[in-house]
Image (cartoon, rainbow, N blue to C red; front, side, top):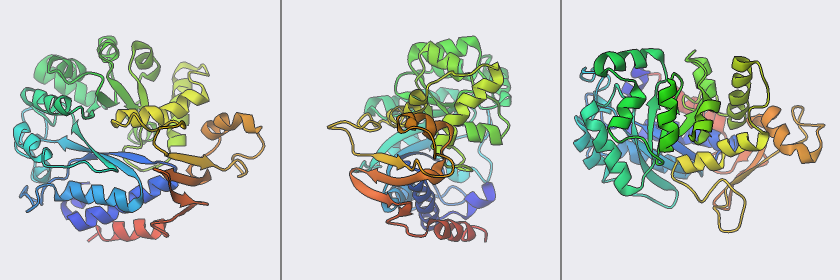
Length: 361
């Protein structure tokens, strides 16, 4: 990962993001929340435009025809009490105040919102967590944080601070309705209660959590406690929100050996309206007058979806369909994908291959 990050420039970052965002549109995704932390040139030297890399992502989303919430990420240390490594210098602004000053220069656009992220409790010193949280709260901007993704993170946090990552975030005012914890995998009962009482959201990324062998998060318990659930792709090894929705239910079945934890409608809501809300977009994710005209259609005549009655379309989508069954994607009333073809990036596989090849050196 670091060797690729070292090669990124604003131009190659734009090419890669444009291709990935076009793949998202093909999968029916109309908005991305980008955890953006490659801020500076290698070695940590700022670009002439200190937000050149973030601007590249905003432009890439426009070129791919989707919305973006740029979750500009504070990444200030390599671990608890450890300075950034040589590879991480381009991630770091030095301290949270400098991060906030740079972020404040970013401007929202019709298709782009500006949010914030704390990469993790190990990457932002405890005394600087409040600065990031306050920046987001003062602007009404969404705030995301990778939370308890691995047990090693919990162990290191307890050793450094004598408390869990969730407890540390609560102490520094990070939790709340504008905040989303990404993964929330290894939580204590007290952690779950803190997240639920505060209304902090949970973004599950089942394909990534599975790929990395991180574990299965307590999604049912979190939702019961009051934490809204949404879904994300995280590493983008798989870009298929239908698979993410299906995986959340199937993971819970494997863990509990019982079925039916969520209806198909609830899983689709986590992949749509609640996902938009986690990105600060309360005007999308529903089909009704006055809402943003973002929607996708799924073919019910493929080898995966043929047969069920039309009234079981939601169940068919969640439990049988894949991103390959998306036929149309409309964003803000504009047809971005028609009959499975991206209208702005006609050959998405080639765009992906070319963008990746350019980073191989």
